[in-house]
Amino acid sequence: MKLQQRKTRLRAAALGALAVSGALVLTACGSDDNSGSTGGTGTKTSAASDVKCDGAKGQLRASGSSAQKNAMDLWAKGYMAACSGVEINYKSSSSGEGIVAFNQGTVGYAGSDSPLKPAEVADSKKVCSGGQGIDLPMVGGPIAVGYHLEGIDNLVLDGPTLAKIFSTKIKTWDDPAIKKLNPGAKLPSKAIQPFHRSEDSGTTENLSKYLTASAPGDWKYPIGKSWPAPGGQAAAGSAGVSQQVKQVDGSIGYFELSYATSQKISTVKIDTGAGAPVEATPDNASKAIAAAKVVGTGSDLSLKLDYTTKAEGAYPIVLVTYEIVCDKGNKAGTLGTVKSFLNYTASDEGQKQLSTAGYAPIPAEINAKVRKTLATIS
Image 1 (cartoon, helix red, strand yellow):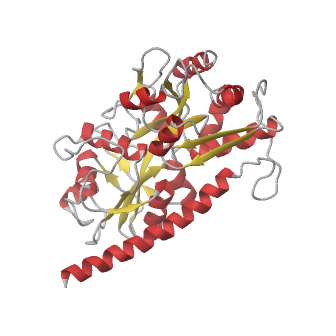
Image 2 (image 1 turned 30 degrees about the vertical axis):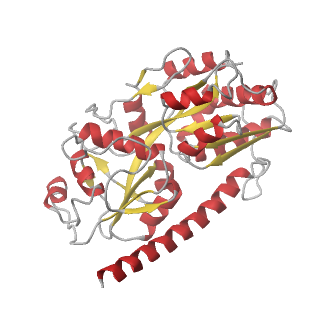
């Protein structure tokens, strides 16, 4: 009987995942159609300012992180309206898939929520003639922990409690650990249904880094793009996880703030040990990202983040997503467009656009290094 029940649950989960995947395909198709001349309402997209189209031409294909998809859509529409005849085609998949595509030479650049691993750098030398892949931080933002719990619109959790929820050691919403962080809240004795990403994901990796740093006694799983803990349910992409949380009462999941904002999903405030719990906002994420240090060598600008910050108002579950390009050996047919487009995204005007989509700009000091590096790629 138990085996049959398990099969039934797996079948239901598979059907749910299929439905989510279908929704994602539609989303991805929409993002690939970057004509940029009109928005969905038929309103003509305004040309972005601070754009230099010199050297840009034809179609530039890119792929990777779904975390930066909304930023890329925003940037690409404004850029293409400014640079007639140029098409930016960013396919939202995952950081892992983007890096594979980059190292196979099928895209001009890749988006990734984590910097390249040494083995990935080694692979990149096959397509970066005389050079290698490097990481350019371009988009910052909070990873929101979204939840759906009828009657509860204000919820505080900390690292250890989140670690126990996502590893299914805490199973109901009225667990003493949750009650302690939310005195006065009428928490129901309802089962918690945690959702995580089904595919390799930089968002997963950054959440794992936070849980490892903030709850070392409760989260002892390896840090990586794959979900490491037992239990929970999987969904594809940030869009899939957020859709499940939106639909399922008693659920909790993680995704970029823009997905929570667009679907009106409540988000958890994090007790960091500071004077007050911290909400996931672009400004609060910027306070945490501002303390990031460049740890990449040469022209690589990968960053180290402090996930245990107790600074007032600093939201600790953040990610920085990178654009991965060749420092040398970029394809001649796309080099001009890569430099032109990424110079715009790293410009003051480009970075200002991020807050409108729920992201956090890269700190000015680091962003200046990105622009300096872009000037040297060849």
